[in-house]
Length: 285
Image 1 (cartoon, rainbow, N blue to C red):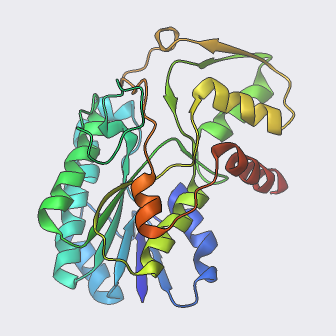
Image 2 (image 1 turned 135 degrees about the horizontal axis):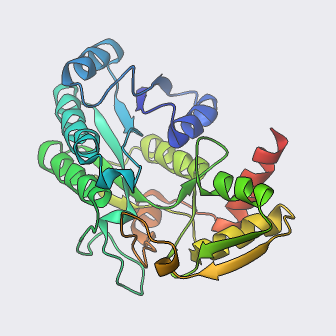
């Protein structure tokens, strides 16, 4: 079975690449966004015609949350038109699509974890384009899995974990937002979950939520990074109002993972345990 991975140079793409050799029954083809541009329908068709994938994991996305408020057309092209193109080409080639979405599709005003059935109400361009991309896939392609995730980090690419460690090396004091609550997600764990969905062969198509277990604020996430790495710094909790950004963040975006655990029999690690594993790997490089 051939698995095509788009957006192969991103965090999730690299995490999938690191795990690929553990799956003898799958043949992986990794394509960067230059090699398989999801905004280019013709190029996508050529890639699919060459590869003939049974599954496609779409790890390509416009994820610059604040820049999306300015680069609206680009965000729309990748997250909406790109998702539509993929859905249409997957339908044409009878390919099952695993598409990555986000907790930003929610407004963030709940105080209990969001389920897949909760109403969406994205507040910024990024969240809106990701939700519209989901809707295009739902409309076009029956055989799809849409997996919403949150606060993705890893030893690969650019992410909060790496940024916070770099800042700690440059400063004695650091303020981190303490009134946005969600769940950090190790890209390696997400990659493994996606591959489990493929190998378990259940055609239980639809929307699923996946993050690590547990709840944290960005301040608590930073604190745990420093604790594990023995970083001594004056870490201060600050309100969102003290750190204004062009795009509004959900105040609460914890997601309920019951559905994905029950349907696919997944066991999900707590975010602290998973963070320790990533930091161990990152520090050994």
